[in-house]
Amino acid sequence: MTGEKSPLPATDGEEHITKDAVKEYYSKHLKTSVDLQTNACCTSARPPDHIGTAMINVHYEVVSKYYGCGLCLPEDIDGLSILDLGCGAGRDVYIASQLVGAKGRVVGVDMTQEQLDVAIKHKEYHAKIFGYSNVDFKLGYIERLGELGLEPGSFDVIVSNCVINLSPDKQSVLREAFTLLKPGGELYFSDVYADRRVPKSLREDPVLWGECISGALYWNDFLNLAKKCGFTDPRLMKDSRITVNNRKLEGKLGALKFFSATYRLWKLEDLESHCEDYGQAVIYKGTCPHCPDVFDLDGHHSIEKGKVFPVCGNTWKMLHDTRFKKHFDFIGNFDTHYGIYDGCGTSIPYASAKDGSTGGACC
Image (cartoon, rainbow, N blue to C red):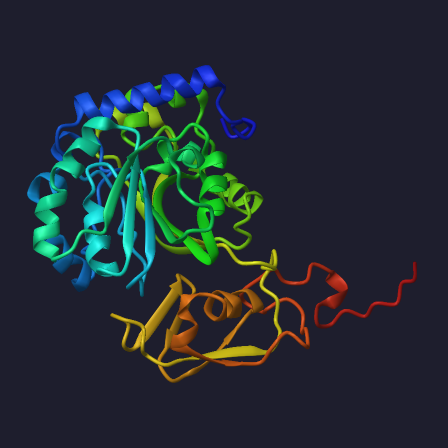
């Protein structure tokens, strides 16, 4: 099982079968989230207060058909253009609609007509509650976003909630997302990952596909794929173990372990493959909405207000060349390079660089 080669993109026939199976599962078998057979497509964490407040305004039928594994709306999105991949019945679209406000816009894409019918049915309801209408829904495949009339480089943020794992061609999804993002934009999404490559026998199980299990990428394959598609330095926000909670299905999975994880992938030029030290630092002003004391760029960068916070070159760019620039003061530039950033990258591999090495050999 661990010796399997990295899964190639599905053939047209395999892709068609997988999509049909997922469509049937979400349109015929799942009527509400109660019908899920595992906890892979469930969000257990309590949402931040501002998201919880926005959720109260979303129609009950829309909320009841939510099948997500995370909370994937990033900070500071007022007035932005948002795209939701695999929006389903539109819960996250209608939450984002409130957070971007009347000057922003949110587009949801899904391949299941039955799910979109619910989302569209309640557009007028939400427009009355919010006082404006800024959402649109499109029927289509997240692997072929270019066919939906969406302008390249037109979105500030792309989100997705436990959907990319359902795609048989994840490389196309990431490439299409990269194309649609503005420079400095981000793909911010939650999904399911495995601790090893999922064997073919499980990838052919329609129930496990629909439950967001069989389509999970091996985490290291995902990182390499993201880099290949232009997202050079994937940043992990948070993760949690998925326990499945179904004895029958657990028996099929054997020793495989699954995780729900939220990543942010930036569309930024000249990000480096490793964290390089240029002697830079940032100071957080405490001005990002809902983050008065600490700003969490990712799981390893919790930046306290007012504190000089040393950063690598990539982190500096993720703050300086994005919408977050106004919330920070910046120290340093890229004039002087000091090597790999200690504690944030790969240590120099040469034994002769370690303390106590006597050296002496010639070549």
